[in-house]
Amino acid sequence: MRLLPYADPGVPDTRSPARFLWWLAREQKATIGIAALLGVIWMLAQAVMPLAIGRGIDEVDDGDSRGAMVWVAVAALLGLIQALVGVVRHRAAVANWLYSAFRVIQLVGRHASRTGPAVPAKMPTGDVVATTSSDAHHIGHVFEVISRFAGAVMAYVVVAVIVMQTSFALGLIVLIGVPALVGALAPIIRPFQRRQREFRESLGKLTSLGADTVVGLRVLRGIGGERVFAGRYNTKSDGVRRKGVRLATMVSVLDSMMVLLPGAFLVLLTWVGAHLVMDGTVRPGTLVMLYGFAFFLMIPVRTAGEMTFVATRALVGAKRVITVLQIERDVPTEPQPAPAGPGTNGTGPHLAAASTPGVLIDHHTGLTVRPGELTMLASNRPAEASAVADRLGRLVPGNGVTLDGIPLDRLALADVRRRVVVSDPEPMLFTGTIRTALDPAGVHSDAAMLKAIEVAAAGDVLESVQVGLDGIVDERARSLSGGQRQRVALARALLIDPEILILVEPTSAVDAHTEAAIAGNLRRARLGKTTLVITGSPLLLAKADTVAWLADGSVAATGTHEDLLNNIPDYRRTVTREEVLA
Image (cartoon, rainbow, N blue to C red; front, top):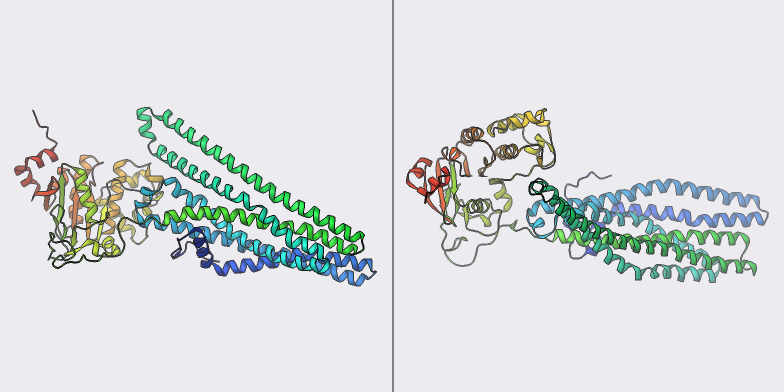
């Protein structure tokens, strides 16, 4: 048995759905091989059973009771093998299902986390969710059926050989009839695949609409838009239902054909066999054997049809998974090469390299974040200030930022993420305990976490969940207020204790008393460490070593908070919320 999740799910082949499924098969070839071998033994034990019964009947007809008992013992042994091997085969088949499905889930989850906002920006959220909730399940199913399909193929060959040796006419019917039955299902597969793809796309869009509606439910109630969105959801839901009915109709046709065609084949085989018995060509026991083979052959034929069915669904699911995995992240992981040309230093001719280690410079605006200082950036255009944070943290593609005199996009992304941490103003908290929200990797002590909570003035969060760090928060921490979520996120960023910490509006959702406490705590906690805070709060700005005023896309002034208040009217109006009188 394997331990899940995988330490490394591997690098998939995304050139086509078939190649992706083949790559999955190679990744677990050992377990698939074992399951296939068990499937062959299990199916052969069933296939040979009619032979043992028929031979036993012929021995009784000849008056050889001892020979009949031998074949009875063979039949009993075959039944025992079928029972024991069937249990182990089923376990191995389900393991293959789970291994492949979980690998797909890990691949999608890992890729979505590594690409950040690129996946939801280019693909509906519902479609991404469907890859793990549905498509991974369908992909895993094909690996579960492989063991039975391998056994079905081998059993078909063995039965065909036995029947050919018994009667050439019956053997010919088997050899031609079974492939003809499988081929007869081919015209149904293409429309089935199309309808299934349409249904999956509609279901993904419906999931996205439902998720968006739930997230904005409070706003919808405030503006009286519940009925409008409920009506829109009902319309979409009805469309998904109709496509589901069309898909179910095609499934019912496929299932009925999988019963009708083998049944017709059985009737033909029995009719020919009966005439051969009447002609004296075969014996009564042989006739019983042929009946048994005729009934048994329905199993491999149905298994072949099932394999076709699940393989089609797996290919559809693999195509969706590949669509997710082929979405590239906006920010390259590997360092970017320096552009050609003398004297550019990889930053362009208009950028100067920093000479002091630890200096972070945004050459677009002229902002310099000096090592060991608490720097704050204020602007009357918050979007411009947030864009600075994105560039400094290399959250967006492009250059124009240097760290230690080196363009940020020429450093490995892992190094940038290790040295520079940007705390988003709208934090994402997942379902779980406060402990896992603060320390997902589980590397920090309780004392360190409690210290970070103290600095972020988030002690009331622990009180609200009643059991401290082990208190549970629900999805997106809806049970916490906006200010509480913001302070938990601040504590999480402080706990990382990076070389350079960038905070974007860390106190926008808290009251003035709490904000003042955070301002003092933050300065003490980050004393001597490089910190940039993007804020318009005078309580925070008053604690800064240096305040930079961003106007019209560039740093227009720097100094202390008091200096800028006295000398820069626009700065004063922005941070004090003064009203300009006409």
